[in-house]
Amino acid sequence: MQLNNLRPAKGATHKEKRIGRGEASGKGGTSTKGNKGGQSRAGYKIKMAHEGGQMPIQRRLPKRGFKNINRIEYKVFNLGQIDQLIEKHGLKEFNLENLYINNLISQTDRVKILGNGVLKANIPFKVNAISEKAKGAIESAGGTVEIVK
Image (cartoon, rainbow, N blue to C red; front, side, top):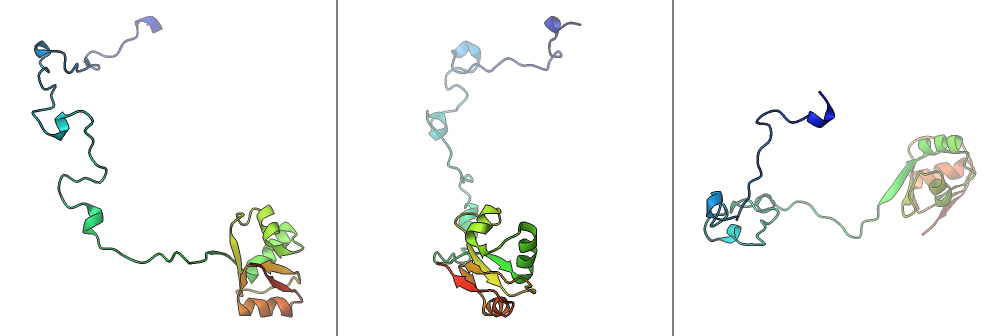
């Protein structure tokens, strides 16, 4: 056996159906598309969610919920996490620039600090939002808090 005499097994391949090549082909006349109607015409395309006349699923299901367009999404850090991040990345200041440089947030993220955990480090914080409990814990540890808009 050589590459030049390799061929598929007998019956594995079929001739291409040649449509619209006269009556003798057996597929002439309407070219297997039937008579009249959208599907027989050129340029016919079915709509994406069409279910053959059945009520589509997006219309059968009820509307749910509400998306508030004024909601502000924050990337949240807890005090316990912050202590670990300071040790791991050697942060001298907890601000948006340092977090972005260390790939902890993206450039457009807003940062909020929450008060879960214990903070030992006394470093300055520049964030978009902070809870009262977290602010108290940071100031009692000797750090400062500045809210950036």
